[in-house]
Length: 421
Image (cartoon, rainbow, N blue to C red; front, side, top):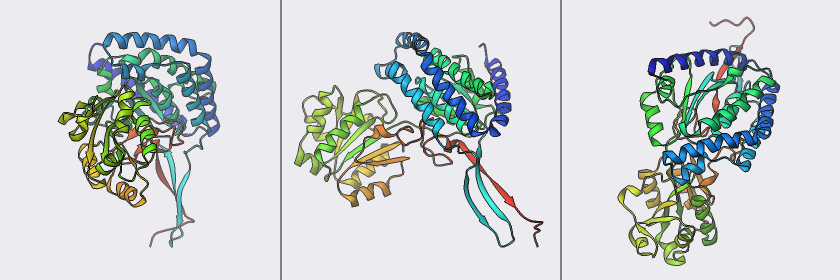
């Protein structure tokens, strides 16, 4: 693609096709959408060797590009991960169709009966990095909510995304739904992103899923509404009343299960009294697991730790690295999270109900957890089958963005020859 004008021509054509498809999707029954998703899941299973071969091309591209091990892990597909994609498609298919659901209804003294019902947004644009599974997740959720979607995946995942997208299109074709309902931008050129951000009248909302640079670009340049998905600077606070064995298990999982996802813990806060009573076992577990522990203050004296720099707090590592410090109680932990957090996901480990309530009531992150790993910050784990991202803004969608969050609503008002005085 040579320039922005060419990219704008491409996105305009895709946007027009998407708008036409959205009109048909808005009227499609739940059965046809179900059939399309089940058909796509079947195609994923049928084409496993083909998808893995495409993914290997992307892995080679990523290695040549110098991606970190954690980023390569986000990119990698294998049989188990493809099974997860297939299961996610089936889970979304089995969910209740949100379109047409009555949110509320009431009668007015004037004789009017009013219903607020869910309706599709229209055309959704999703811009994402690295993880090719987003191609299936975003396509499935947009379809379930009756929306057409334009997908622009990361440059490093182009071949994998194309292979998965082909399965989604085949599902649409089998269900006799418009194949342009799920479109993938066929180029690595960054001008396509700029063209999507300026596609007023064609794209109704943009959802960015990626690092700080991508999200910042989208928020600065978009001329269409955005569901913001900021960095996953997730905190775990080990309270003085935490169960030590539960704390060891949760912290290790929150950091090490998958270090390259947005729900991975990036900062560990430990109450002084807990540390005095129970020692450094949590830190030692992390070190034994190969995590680089960047420690502040007293914790920096522990063998194997690295002294933390000021910018290690408020940083999304997406790697086997965690920042840690001691705090004096829940209020100091809350103050730290307010200063350095991204309002994504925070977890408190405590057996004290009052302390947990204070943590929940004093923080405004999209997801707050108690005695649970931040790795659960995922739409699939919330029962949504999949999610496009974790929205950290406060307008319309917040937390995991599933099919329901990809709808808006309209009012249906019924009278009986009713007139206003």
